[in-house]
Every structure is written in C-alpha cells, then in structure tokens.
Length: 202
DNA sequence: CGACCGATCCTC
DNA sequence: AGGATCGGTCGT
Image (cartoon, rainbow, N blue to C red):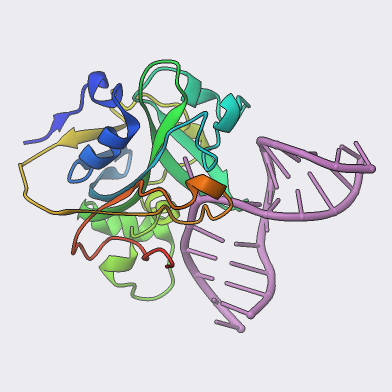
C-alpha cells in the first residue's frame, strides 16, 4: 500500500527531509508503464549559505528558478552536458533548497529501466540505479520534467510498508570545491544496501 | 565574448 | 585515465 507524500512532507528542514526520504518509493508513470524504486541514498543542499548548492548566495537563474518556487516540485538539471540529476525542492518556504536523489533500489518496471538506460550488455541490477544520473536515465527524467509537481500523477514519492534500517551519513560526493561545506555529513544512505552508489573518498 | 568547469558515467 | 558536451559563471 503506497501513499503519496503530502506537500507538508517537503516543507520541513532539508536535512530532516533528506533523511526521511530514505525507504520511500519514487514512482514514475510513462506511456510505456510504471517504474518504482526505493530511495536508498540522498544528499541535502540547503541553499543560500551552502557553498555546494546551486542556490548559494541566493543565485537565481533560469536553471535554479524552481528551487525558489513551491516545495515538493522536481528540480532536474543537466550535468556535464549529457547527464541529468533529479532533486526534490524542500525546506521552509522562500528558501531555495533541495534533496538530491542519488540512488534507488529497483522495485517495479525493471525491464523498462534497462531499456531506458540503453546499456550494451548484461548489466547487473545493482548497476542500474546506483547514481544520480543513472536514476534519471532509468526513470526517463529529462529537462521537460523540470519543475513538475511531485504531488501530481506523473512523478511522485510515496511512503510504503514500515521498514527498519540503519541510516549512514557521510560527506557529499563531488563537491570538494565547497570549502568549509565540502565535508559536512549531509549525504544519507541505507546502511548495507547494495544499491547505494560509490563511497566518498577519505 | 571567451575560458573554464561541473551535485557524472562510460569506455579505453 | 580520459572523453563526452553544454549552460552557468566569472573575468576581460
């Protein structure tokens, strides 16, 4: 039994939301079918003070605009020209913050995920969605979905069966330029889960 | 306007 | 270890 998260879920402290998104289910509906994955890894980007955040110093551009809007929408941006990352806009109103979905555990629509990923040979299932851009490929998340309401029916997040797990934390990945914010423990993951992406460097 | 670089991933 | 590939950002 899956229940769509209400907007109020997203309208809280980004660090709380990032941690609580673990174990929740990301659902994507396309014409080809439904794709579901359990969120196993997230990162918080808390906005104006966070030097790793796209909205550091309240930077508002065409790209970051959705982070300044209503909470509970999708922030999807292009990275390295060819890949995408997917975040949920979270936090108190008017503060541009987001939670990056770094990895999910495939639950439903696995063949569709494989097709969307367009990989050559037999890829182990653990490699399908264990990274932010891999999730976007598998779930067919592109620029067109940037800004979409996660309280709608095309892309949303649900709570499901209560599950017990230990939460691990670490520094965030790929933000070593962020000076005093590069080592803050704002990456959250389900301990022992096989679908978590690479570990950060020491 | 030009140069540089990234919340990444795949292939060599 | 290197390449893909393009928009944001900053310096000239």
